[in-house]
Amino acid sequence: MFGETAGLGETALVDHTCGWLVPPIDPEAVADAIRNVIRSPEEAALRASALRCRIRSEFSPELQATRLIDTWRRLADST
Image (cartoon, rainbow, N blue to C red):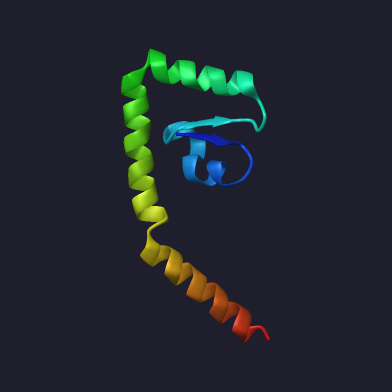
């Protein structure tokens, strides 16, 4: 997984354990990340596995629904 250092990529990939973060609009950084995957498929597999676990635990539909409802409740309570 590759993600930009701006936006949601950074949220999902945290501290490079779940993928490779690259600066936005930096083709050389993307190329370096791709070279890393090619040179170390074992590392790529470990990062992919870590990302799957993170997505299941932090971004599950149930958790997202709970967070959204909590946000709506806080907004409703503040009005």
